[in-house]
Image 1 (cartoon, rainbow, N blue to C red):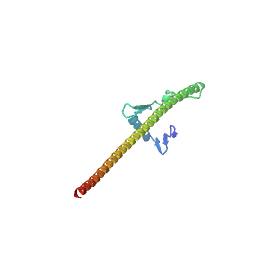
Image 2: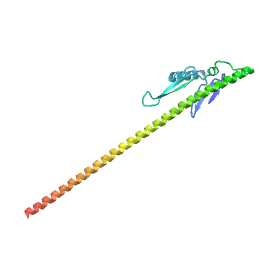
Image 3: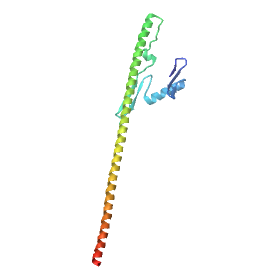
Image 4: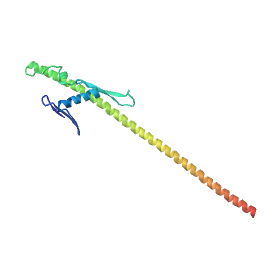
Length: 177
């Protein structure tokens, strides 16, 4: 991740081969518009709701508060040139760290919820595949049994015909003989 403050106006997030570059004002406005449109993120704060189940009632929500410096420091300027200013800055920075930590915990909890949901979906898919395999095996066994039964019946019919042909031959021989 690259961050250049104030005069450089550069912010680049990188995850593997993907990155989001906010190197100029047009990119930043486009990114802010996309967040606002797709996730309802506006003026440094927002949230998103994700459907994680089969129906719309199975959802989790991520809400991120405003983490701008103005919000974190309550709009006050930090002045560390005097003892009182440094103490106030120390207190404001401590409060900002607490706010950031709370937001990180919120995001971590959301991530755990998504991980749990993904594991449940994987389990459901495996169970469904196993059930489908059992049904396929059951159908195969049933058809194999039916085929064997029909084969036995056909052979029994052939044996009965052969027996009948032999008996009628013996009967003709007795009568003719």
